[in-house]
Amino acid sequence: LEEKVTGWLGEMIGLPEGFHGVIQDTASTTTLCALVCAREKTTAYGVNAAGPDGLAGAGALRVYASREAHSSVLKGAKIAGFGAANVVAVDIDESRAMDPADLEAKIAADLADGLVPCCVIATVGTTGCTAIDRLKELGPVARRHGLWLHVDAALAGNAAILPEMRWLLDGAEFADSLVLNPHKWLLTNFDCSAYYVRDPEHLERTLSIHPEYLKTGRDREVNNYMDWGIPLGRRFRALKLWFVLRSYGVRQLQEMIAGHLALAREFAGWVDEAADWERLAEVPVNLVCFRWRPAGVDEAQLNRVNAELVEKVNAEGTIYLTHTKLDEVYTIRLAVGQRGTGRQHVDEAWGVLRKMAGEMGGR
Ligand SMILES: *Cc1c(COP(=O)(O)O)cnc(C)c1O
Image (cartoon, rainbow, N blue to C red; front, side, top):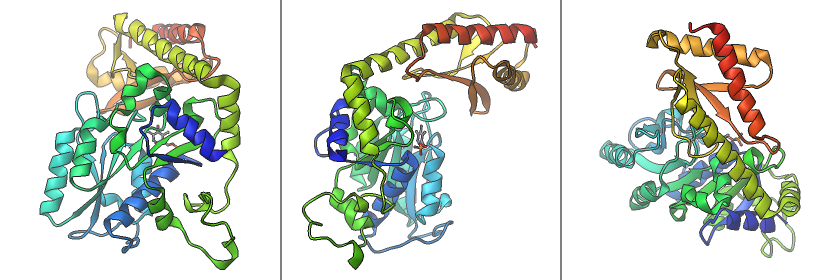
């Protein structure tokens, strides 16, 4: 069933031929697996962890991700022995996507210093503001240098079930591994991460340990998923994804996601039109980043004012908002992603925001 549902999901998001899926608990775990696979590929199964700080200086293995990448990249690098210091923060462009030219430059600089480039982690839909790293441009850089390319599409990858959103994963053919989380935006209860790899044998070689008590007569006949991830025992996560896919069907799931995208765009339009509000990022999928910008309040006060607004809105209790900082700018985030969320809820959210802002009286 796990082979079946990961196959279906791969087709739904238009994944290129040649990927094999496995379900893991979280995207963080799959990123760790990808890092370990990258490490073993680079070192030909030779080197093991150097400790939480990794190696320093010549010979150190390097991981590249944009500075908007998820915290699981740093965490995975620490656990896998690269060390946080060997995670290179690649510059971002104005859409906050990884800059391929800077990736190339950072790899070249590392090579010149005797460091060993190993893995690129691209993010399709960053956590902060759903910036989309362009796989079509990053892929050739990774390939040219023989680096592992892992694609973290935890949230936004789900939107690729819509044909008009397939562009999100343009260039996925360059990836060695890719993850998306049905538990984030595809109605599947936590936890359920779909991890796709190009070379399952490499994954198995990297992770398999076969003690006598686990040997069966059929080890070579079936995919033995104990070798495709970190835990030995595994939950039957494929079943709940099977239920979701079978009970809704692709069409209804597409309609749900298309509805969320439309609501997010509509909300973004309201923000754009309102004089006292400002949108702070593009809206490629379902997350709108914005802030209140009342006339007469100077820039230095805006972070504090917006933090107070979010606190007030959340205390009011109708909606719950989270925030981030984009270049030190306090940013309110509104995400549309639940089955029951309709236009009236988004409209109500906008109403609450303006009402609470009004009560703060332009401070
Ligand atoms: C949510 C998220 C993660 C972490 O997902 P888990 O499944 O909770 O580990 C990683 N990367 C991105 C881009 C995310 O949005």
